[in-house]
Image (cartoon, rainbow, N blue to C red; front, side):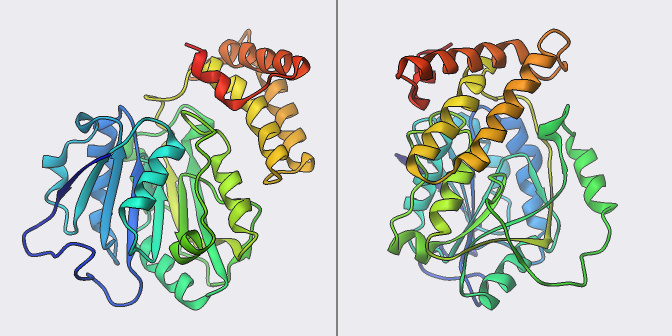
Length: 315
């Protein structure tokens, strides 16, 4: 794994000094082939009322991020190079910042409300029994054609004021596009993202959340607000995703990080959506590819050779 670090001259590295009293908070962003998205979205982290102590971006290739543009950010920025795969890249980020108290994992197309990181710190300090926290997604472009950066910023500006109720609530799983993790639990309990879920790592957030839930609370907050742009470039092929929609939940049931009560409805829902929309698909979704992947996975399950790793042999 190669590492490149860029930071303003006035700032010390994470391991030697902290920008803020309290917790050391690192933002970790895995990405692949989305250089323009990183350049358009990541600089908005500078608008945070409580800025991160460090930003770590992990990509398969150095050209996946324009470090010259990110060097002007008012906190250290580190670029890691790792073999591709969402889980593998997230684990590389964990390994790179062993002294972090909190890692806030973000998708490269997730925009934060200005108070997001300050709220993360407040909530973790006030709730020592919480190990994983996720926010409230005001709009999710992943379920539709997606939003531009300007549209996402407008959605944040037009959002209602944060709720007066400052409570957190237990949730079954965090959402991978915005996932804050207490690192002491990760280290003590040896938690990792499962690299047996390759490429896009479908349901890796559920798997990690349920593993963390064995040791502490998994919660969501109405005051951690953001917009997921749902950018369509750099996504997994429809064939691979369709296979993962069947293979990954069954694999997680076998690991006992998912149960049939959650897995079966999700499998049925995805299969039904792909079947009913395959001949009149949304322009941004490869429904026929997903359906083919679903059927391949069902066939492999009947033959006893179903595995999330099988998508590595697919185009």
